Structure formats: structure tokens, C-alpha cells
Image (cartoon, rainbow, N blue to C red; front, side):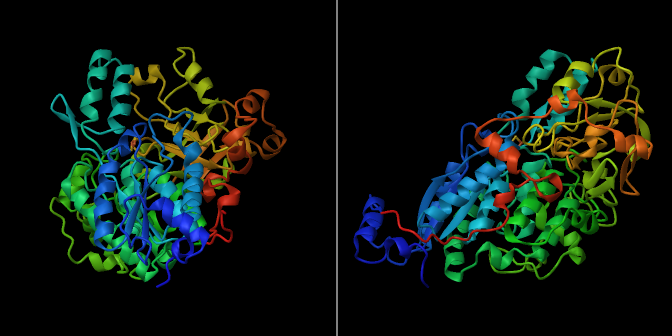
Amino acid sequence: MALRSARWYAGQDRNAYIHRAWMRRGTPADAFEGRPQIAIANTASDLTPCNAHLSEVAASVRHGVYEAGGIPLEMPVVSLGETQMRPTAMLWRNMAAMATEEMLRANPIDGVVLLGGCDKTIPSLLMAAASVDLPAVVVPGGPMLTGTFRGKPLGCGTDVWKLSEEVRAGDLTQDDFTRSESSMIRSRGHCNTMGTASTMALVAEALGTVVPGVAGTPAPDSRLLEAAHGTGRLAVEMVTAGRSPSTFLTTASFHNAIVALAAIGGSTNAVVHLLAVAGRLGVPLTLDDFDRIGSHVPVLVDLQPAGRFLMDDLHRAGGLLAVLREVRDLLDDDALTVTGRPLTSYLDDASVWDPEVIRNRSEPLVREGGIAVLRGNLAPSGAVIKPAAASPHLLKHRGPAIVFDSIEDFHARIDDPDLDVTADSVLVLRGCGPKGYPGMPEVSNMPLPKKLLAQGVRDMVRVCDGRMSGTAYGTVVLHVAPEAAAGGPLALVRTGDIVALDVAARRIDVEVPHTEWAARTPSRATLDGFAHPRRGWERLYVDHVQQADTGVDLDFLVGASGSEVRRESH
Ligand code: FES
């Protein structure tokens, strides 16, 4: 087998000397003689607390790589901390993917182990691996352990929304709210609800990019280090076998990922991430595939935000493989994994150990979960809603719009006692799409007006061109495309217009006479609400980012460049 790295290291000329000599520094004497060079792309960072433990995971990967005859090379890559970054970590998902792709291509690397956890880190690593197309395998960093407050479990994210609403409604004191902080974040690891990080770890396994059975292992669990060790060994074998993403990530893999996404009641954010990864591979995945494949799949996992339990409960109950066994007939047997074996070949050995956490197919948490794709004159290119996280009585609803031109406008007015709002109103927020914010933040699950909370209202229809945290819940129509800042009709809605949502009919419309609608133009205030960056990454991003219905990738990053580098550096 000819290694890619041999193009740097083989031979006796000056350039090979330079490449070898600078890398020696204690490496074994035979390090450059046919031993696969395995990068460990590590998103550990103190500013990404969910991933801060990944250097320990990397050490276990390192052992596995050595053991299998490879040379491990730890490579810090761009890390994105969901809770810290402003205006939103999503603004840099594509930058992180681009940087990792370029670093893998530029260096003498034969294969890569991808270490991610927090929301955007696994998606960006997968996008990079797909575009450079070197043998690649993911080790998800794992969720935190369940925290408790006043004797009750606390779910990261989900309970933040609940507790903050309780403070706003006067049911919880500010002091107790503050006290709950350190109870919620109890250990290393990423959010322990079925938020985006948990979703993407499990979906990455369903896609075939994680060793089956590993995703969802809690971060402090010693079995994670064991799995990391084994994955290091596997990465060497993948190089020998030439098992790069394009050889096993197919339409069948994405089909299985969508079934899994629905069965676990996963985050809507997986839609844009899977579309982006498919776009890098040239797999013809569309927004409508999520509805077609996933919307009738039952939600079997009883995890917050849709249900009761948390990620270490899911792991204890059997994990993703046990969930997939329940929906085996819906899976595509042709989809392969990083090990070379089909995903479905792992299901015979899977068992459900706690049917409260992983429901039987005949007693699902939600009979039809998945993600519904809506269209209409408010979202000609599509919008999504997660019915399992919505209130059943609002899935068909008509009500007058209250329109906000920006999140700042929203915060300034939502608690105004004079705001003309009722439980029937539809809150419309624009300027939150990829271009408009920029970065498409998780603001679509707008907090409800204080005066309605005091009346006991806990959900309203909300419409937005942004995203929603995977840990959030509510009747929220999100990812509206095209977004307002890209000329989408959301820019034309006015307060008082009647908005009609009909999830069963897959419609989201504004009821304005056609001639009046056709004559409308965005107001000055609406246009002022959009981002107008002059330089730097934001400028590049706004000029090139695509819309939610195709994955929010940059237009020039769609597709793959492979790993070929034609020119030498000296
Ligand atoms: Fe990192 Fe939730 S904030 S996973």
C-alpha cells in the first residue's frame, strides 16, 4: 500500500530530508517507513468547556494508533464553544470545517481521528473529512452526567429555558435560579439532553462515521477511553483498507441518519448539518428527504426536551443501537460504517435494558416524530418544525402576527405591558438567518411575553428565519428560507397580518390579498435590522453563505477537493 505521507517522507532528496528531520524529535526510527500517519484532530479548548477533556481522549487514541503500527499526530483544530461565542458559534462552523480540511490536506497525513462534542464541532469535522476524503473516524466526546437540583434531575439547556421562564413568571427566586447553575453542569462532557451535541454524536454513528455502540458514552465513563483506544487502532486499519468517507457515506447512510434523527427525537439543527455534509460528498440529499424519510418515524427515546430522561439514562438503557433495533425495518442494509461492516449488522446484539427510556415501537413517546418540512408564501424554499416539541393544539393555528425586525427589537418590546399580544398571536422574528444576523443563531424559540406567562400561557406559535437550540421546545417554525435578508417574503410581513400554520398540510402562509402582497417592499427598519459587515470572515460569510434549505454552507465550499497537493513547499 502506497501511503500518501510517503510523498513527503520517502526518498533521499533534500525535501524528504527536511520533512523527516523536523518531525524526528523522539519519534521511532522507522516512523517514516510505511507507517500510517494518523492525525488526531482535537477540538479541546478551555473556551469550549464541553470539549475540554478531549486531550485525555486523544491520549487513548494515541495508544491505539501506536499499537496498530501507525504514528499518531495530535492536531489542535478550530474549536467552537456553543455557550460562549457571540454572535453565534454557527457563524464559524464553515470556517472551522475549511480550516480543518486545509490543515489535513496540507500536511503529511494518511488518516484522521476526529474528536468533537459541543454542537458545531462534530459537524465541522465531518464536513472537513468529507471534503478532504482521507480515512476518517469520529470519537464523540460524550455527554455530562446528570445533575440534580432540589432532588430532581436537571437537563442542560432544557431546564435553563424552563427555570428562566419560572423566574419570569415569578415562580422561582433569582437566588435559587443562580444556585442551580453548578448543579446543572456536574461533570465534563457536552449537554446531556437530546440537544444538538447529543443528536450529532448519535446521528454521526447512524451515518456510519463512529464505531457502532460508542456514541453517547458519557464523557467521564472509562469506556469512552477504551473506545478511543480501539478507534485509534481502527484508523490505522482504515488507511490500509483505503476506507475514506466517499467509499462508505452514501444515500443509504443519510437515509439511516434521518431515521435515527427521528427515532431519538433529535435536534432540528441536524437538518442543516446533514445537508452540509451531504453537499461536501455530492450525495443528493434534500430538505424534503427529512420529511419523506423521517416524519412518520416514531420517537422512541424519552429524553428531554421532548421527554423525561437524560443521556446517561439512554446509554444505560442500551444506547443508539438498541433504538435502531426497534426501527430496523426502516433502515437501509446497504449502509456501511467505518469498520467496513453494515450498520444493521450490529443490531442483532443490541438490547433495550430500560423500556421507560427506550420505548417499544408499539408504545412510542410520539407516534410520528421526525421533522416536518413546511412551505407556503412565507417560506417558498421551506421551513421546518419539530412536532414532537410543539403543543398539539397549536399545530393548526391562525393568528395575527406581531413582527420584530431584530432580536434587539424583540427584547425591547416583548415585555411591554402595552404590547397588543394574546395567546393567539403569532410572534414573527426576522433578520436571524445566515446572512441577516449573521450566522443563523438559536433565537427562534423566543421567550413568551411576561404578561401571558403570568396568565399561564406556556406556548405560542413563533416563526423565524433563525435556528432553535436542540434543548428548546415549543411550536416554533424555523429555518424559514429564503431568509428575510436574502429577499425572502418574511421581510414583507406586517404586524396584524394573519399567519396560518397547518402542520398536517405542511403549510405556513400569510393571508394577505395577492395584489397587496406583491406590492409590498421591506421597510427601512427591516433593512436596518440586517447585518452589513464590511470586512473579515463576516464579510466573506455574508457574501457566500447559502440558505437553510441547502445546509448553510459557503457556496465555494460545497463539494470536495480531495487530498491531492501538487506543489512542494521548498
Ligand atoms: Fe456544548 Fe451544549 S453547550 S453541547
